Every structure is written in structure tokens, then in C-alpha cells.
Image 1 (tube, rainbow, N blue to C red):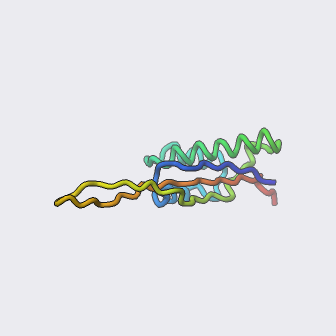
Image 2: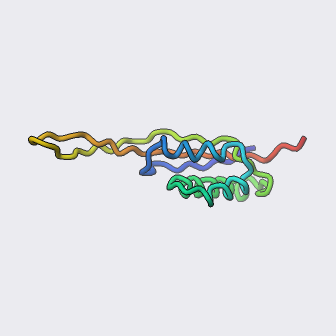
Length: 113
């Protein structure tokens, strides 16, 4: 049994979010939230919200034990790119790509054994 939560169209680059996602992959939910609380990256707050949402989904929708939950999967996909232009010398325009991210978190109950 697994529960998931997805946050879409977050205005942060996927490469920046993946750095923080790798810290909590495979950890218990309580341990992952403790790690994210003291990680000084902007992405840690976003990932923390998604993990809390997945844990709440597991507890309320599937009646799982919140203390036995583990972050089994966490991955970050690239979302739509906002294309903007920045004026430069001699009337030129340089493109700026403002990237977005989709964060997906899957939690499962820890298997005893």
C-alpha cells in the first residue's frame, strides 16, 4: 500500500530541488522532516510540504500508521518553461528560461522483517 502527493508548477529549477530530494530518499518520514527543517535551501521548504501532504494522505485515506511511513520514492520532473527576454547591447534580446518543477513523493509503511 502506498500514498502519494504531487506538487506541480513550482517556480524553482529541478536541478536545485533534486539536490535536496536526494537527502531524504529512503528515510523515515519523521527523519526526513527533521533533515529538511535544518537544510538551508529554498527547495527544502517545498519538499517538506509535499512529504507532509503524502503522510496525511496515507493516514487519512489509507489508514496507515504515520510513525511507520518511509519515503520510498521521491522524484523531480521538469515542468513548463516560462520564456522571457532580457534587453542587451545594440538592441539585442537575450532569452531567459525560467524553469518550473513537479515534485512527486510516494510513502509506504515500513516492512517489518
